[in-house]
Image (cartoon, rainbow, N blue to C red):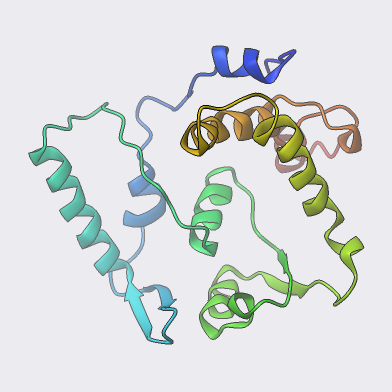
Length: 202
């Protein structure tokens, strides 16, 4: 795995290495039976909607046809924003061969909703809550926030907030793949993850 001396070097040398024939839509969406439940969506107003894989597959096809109608060809890159949901995390980790066993959150309203906990049940993940008035429980999250502030948000001058946000994906890639972590014995998180998935618990 490449190691970098700085975030700026990582940005300059960053490249996506996606297999030539990889199809994330087939891997994440189209392998499921159309009649099987895919998700339960709970809107902020309390409206609950159950969505089957067939609906997601039809919408994915419709979206692909729109892209094609606008001149997007196979091999072209298309950027999309995904919401911070359990499905997105499950798709990401599932692609790495990782099974989610536990999810720790605070006691916020969103994490106590029926929809959120139904999704965790679907993933087979146990829901753990942080203890009230015990910020130590969230120590790793707090450390990550401090690191983000020091190494990304205020590491250099930005023209505006949009410029700052545009730099975030490259920094997160650097943080996860190349930045040595003292708590991990100088390894990057993805190195530890690959070791564990491969059975090399180093």
